[in-house]
Picture 1 (tube, each protein chain N blue to C red):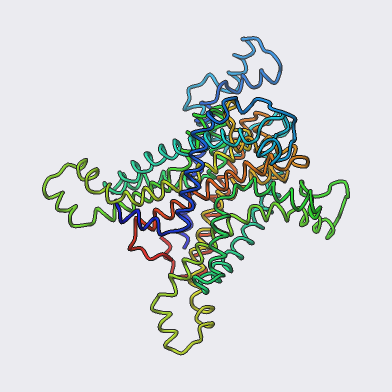
Picture 2 (spheres, each protein chain N blue to C red):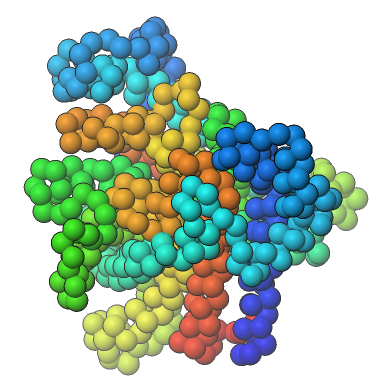
Length: 275
Length: 322
């Protein structure tokens, strides 16, 4: 563990990403404390440029953009984490079953995975949210549905790899139950790959959420980054910052998560030569 | 070869079948049925009229009969009628297919071409400034929301500099013909194409870099070097040819994602393709149209994947057709 931490800390981009990510998480947690009023409330004249009375200026309705971006961090991180958690659960289950048991189960599950990978995933997410009517739940569900296939393929590969080791054969010959072998012996060996891919999935989940809410497919009661950009689009000519600033927030957050994910990858797999 | 194509066709048909079943399932999930929609369009309807409508559309039949009828209609490309646009869904989609294919083709060509170039340059100059520059660009491109990149390009190049138009595919009031029209469309194409290319360029550059590095450590490269070939010859004639393969495969697999990405880009630039139609159908709450777009896009992806596979087996005969 100490080894892992020191390896991670030696990776400068990863540390930078971690610092940035911790900052975003801090802002998300503290948003209701710093801005007790609803981010939908008017605070002053509309179209105030940034670095005036308000750090990021105000939008076309005179709402404080700083508060909106802070609350947006809550939505993005929450949706990104929950959707990824569901997708990881589904992906690990499908990939694990396919990789461990093989045979016809593997064939069927992988065919299903392939079909989900062929479908234009963003269109599918749009369709799901549109049919289920936009809400936090339907957005999370849609993102999870389109995100699990890569995880399933990865876990299947890992399970097949670990299954081939001799210590697993020893477990089988000892008469250990499938459940014990899977949870105590194979899964821990596949964990580092799952953690790395999972962390990168959070980043892509945040990007998908931003895209959906940009198109107007978000919960009407939540202030999300994509929603602010979508709403600010019509005043792009007059107030570019309404679109620019939330977009920068998305960019920095996603970049931070990606850097941390790659740092985790290097630190968890020190033997892998970094190409 | 023929059995290979036949099997892939069968697989493609299976995927299309599953997507149609998915579509049908989604319609069942949505609140209300076609009769409700029609009644809504008409303003009001008596319960007797509603029952009559349901009978006419077979909505009073069991689910599996409805599914069968739905599949039959889909196979003949009868995807229903869009009341909002006053046109049949398949006609509507067909009329919007061209602009989307133009945008996607341009993006595919640019991103694969420049991606291969940048990736090869980065790998040849490993850990030097060229490599670091490409890697940093990749990190940024991976984290940038596509729609936001488009909006920022509009702010800089259309609003501030006035170099490119903000939206549309051509200046319809100018009535250009021939080459002037082509030039006009190309002028409109620049910003949307760049927006969408950035992300995929990064993806392919990264893949190409890894692929070149992998090939460089192969035995055949050592052999070529022992033979006395120059590094330039080895890179050009041996490594690059082999390294390009994974990139081409990936490009084929990414077509689905590219179609999805075109929804936001077409929305940002009002590019009159399938993506903008999807956005419009969202606004008009025309679920049937949205389902039709999804179905046609999925068919497009299946077809492109099939073509890539076939092209692949022709380019490289060693690829087993199984």
